[in-house]
Image (cartoon, rainbow, N blue to C red):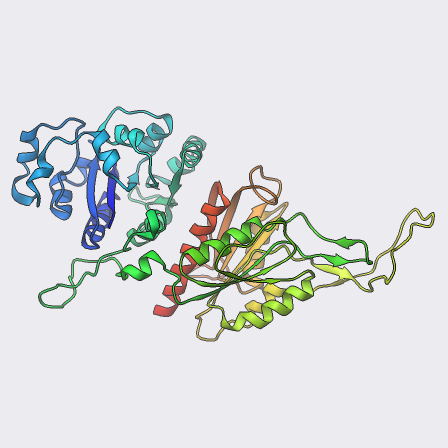
Length: 454
């Protein structure tokens, strides 16, 4: 079990942090909460101390008397000793700031250490997650987005806020992610996957559910490997369409994104089949690889594996066209200034899969789209036309995204809940492809669980 530091800043979303503290404690983790002065206006330190059995940190150098004032709610009297920010930073396996206000994010990005939370952050060296919560306009402000990008570059995982009606009355992005989503993200970041997403909320004496719990319950095995028992199919890399024995049509895909997805799926417990076009690096361990060359080859491999797949992620850059007739000999220039090639369409693998998903909704299909213009409009059209459950789109012209890079910047679209034709849209700012892959697979795992529950 892990040592988790939970930083709570000033936001109405602080009440959700009570669920986090309770769930992690019930799961067997040791949780210490650090509250800013603003956070104390929403949730008292005594509340978190009662939930965790650990003294809530509110000042950098608390006196023993301040600890004693909490009374008998601290399970271990030794925790009432003065414990400074350095000791907490050394103790922790994981640091989560939830909610993370715009002010807190700015101070973390600037490297400030003017209260116990930011001082602990500066001394801490392990995995860490930020969970923003603020007004929609504050979140969209370029300064906040710049600060979040700085935090990402410093190793923070940002659990993006959701959309909806905010406490101020505005509607838009800014709601802190729900506790279960944060718990899943943290489960993937803890060393060796050591995390229960949530504790068993049943009363051990009576065996009846605890009515105060509103967070979904998951077992330890599901938390550490949420894809265990599932089959995942991934396509990756380019395809090559021969013109003659020497030349071929292709694209600039290196397969990095698809390979990172296959690796993340395997780490999260899935049985993974990777259908790969020609790439220059070795596949992840524990993944079954089917190597193909042309789009028709890839279609054949996918059509054989798709029915057994619970989650399919089509990240390959498949050529849309091939030559109508492949020349049997090398095409000679022979003094010509131009040449005409007749091209015909390749199979639309994503559309084929979208039309053959299981009737019971137990298959999740995720497509990718590379665009150079009108990103949202084109991606939304593809999401609907291909019957995808998720579409991940990026813009080739955006620095830090696209082919042959270690990072990516994506926009994630899913069908709307009230109107499937109006997709839900999330922008995930620049992050390493390995981080993006794990986050994507955690999201798809959650979607699969929801489909099973339905």
